[in-house]
Length: 332
Length: 269
Image (cartoon, chains in turn yellow, blue):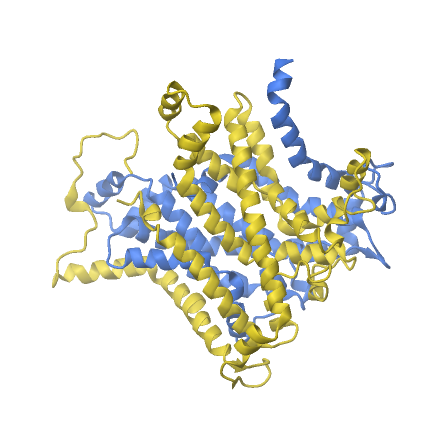
């Protein structure tokens, strides 16, 4: 990436670039040590907080382990239970899949629409951008509590407003049918981070492309379809992949919404009692994992669930890594 | 009139985004009985609710815990992640691409995958029940921060670094004297992200401190306001305002760095 504002004449002194010195050169070792001195903490972090726990999770997933006694090797029994008879695992996996299929596109669509709305505003764009962005800043626990309160079927302002329009509002977070859509509304409200990314990408689309399309007689839909969308595709792919990854670990909002809507309203110890309320409709896969491990102390089974989560998340990450050049881009 | 027409859509959207904040704020000033009704406007104003949340539960302890967690996590993250990002963005060495791929994988890893082994690790160290299992790992780098800092450092022209090298600076001196002053906006944005992440974090504190109430953060304590059997929504909403306010105030002061940071988390088209 060429920095703007600097001379375009390439007179860079190559001698000073930190190129590795030649083989058998004693400076080569000093250079390696220098690089290592920058990386040592991060390398230690990769070993202790990534490689070790991944291997340990795989090992524990083949054991029965309750924290108090030593792990006992049970072979594939945890996996047999997971795939054979744990209906809760399938329920939670289908809830998470539902969120992946609905929440991710809903957030991307909302982000794209608000970003395009901002590009269309002549003056005051910064003001509106700030307001659109604000909900993304709200701490998830606070935002979830607020939403459950606002969508309270009996006393909340949302159903009061719908009542004015003659609509009989649903039970929202108290309904097994509406609980997940209510979580989608919450996620769509806090869409600001994605919106800012899309906005930057929209502003990067070269203006002459639009002018050329206009001269060729393209209408506004055609300009969007054939100019904007292709230019945005790398950003959209990135947003889709990170969105899926975020949704696979969806935990906080589902846990807090269930707790507050069920009326126990605790966000501290004992919250796992209400996970999934109502009727397991908000029991996401990570919540099931948490319950297995930290309420029933079935560490072996919790790790089997964790390994399956890893397999899915890694497969999704691979989609992104195939486009690895996107990230490195700018380096070369 | 044309002004109203042109701006009607953005204004309507803005109102939808703002409405929840307004309802939370209004409810925070109500009596606990009125908060249970569908009234939108406080019949009488009770700013003392904001005092009561500190007197009825140890809110101050939770606030201090949250500040300590977020503050130390941010400082530790910077100490470990800035050098790593520098090595990835500005030094040439075999394996740098491979390491960057590992960093991306780490960033993409759902935390629940490694939760159980890490919990056992910290239990053996006798640190479960405290926030240290969330703070200490920051000394060993944070994948997302390294990623973000690297993207920032790539935008600094190599010419400045080369000039310092010709003047005889070692790589650490180049980082401290040349790169750090130029990378201030990027470092500020990354630090704010980390601080907000810890401030908002729920999963981590729940996992490690839910059984140890004296070490709770604000997220865990937010809805502890109950009167016999009904929730005191006015106090819950007042506490919600207290948790949201610092984030929003910091955002207004550092908006430019912040938005630049969010933009860099995406990929340039």
